[in-house]
Length: 319
Image (cartoon, rainbow, N blue to C red):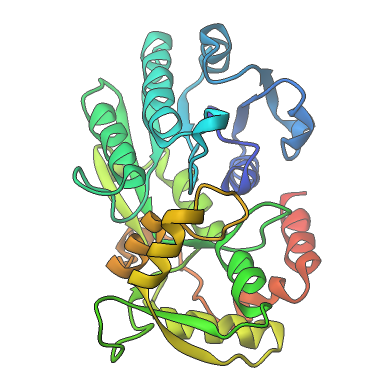
């Protein structure tokens, strides 16, 4: 099976390439000119140079493809560099879906996110509209909505690595965010962290699983974990103790209103809002796809203390 992959040079994309090759499939990857070297196992992939506005390049990736995966997403936008949710989550996704239909591609998988909705943050709303557009195409589609994704970052941005760097390694106490004025439930909002290898396996296993056609599938780890426990697991993985204190989200949002336009500021107002909403979901999709998801615990966070350990394992498995 030839699989057109968009977003193959990023974090989750590198694991999608691993999983596709392990399943005996042929990835066809779009890479921006000059970024071809970022394609994992590039000598085993078909690599097409071009960008997301290059219709000829998109059509070349789709040519003779049996399926397509749209895995492009950002966590924050930088309009001055033309990096926006509207462009990357919605407009580019639409162009690629249209290219897939022109090429006669029958199967299409979309990477979305848990918690997307029509009246949400720009991040949530742009992904929701991409889902709606895909549902109106003629293809056999599946939408995946993972909770926060963790696993060895391979030199890219990743949830637990960012928390270890920006919060656990900081000399400041770790913030236990809370909404409103009372701190009684500080840090108790929950997420369902899901391992990147399990996400990649879900995508690949679904390609020939008819039960997933026309479905929106949530991908969560085997148990939900509070923000406080997430930080505790990361501390354990890196061998550090950390003081944690309640922090009102309103205060952080006020500071972010002034500073989140700067890339060095670690969190945006919308990210704080989405954190406090929680990000939990079940793992039922994994049972459907015959996958046993990995828990978010110190054992599966060992890469935080030794980043090369898990990467070497992945390379060995992909060989």
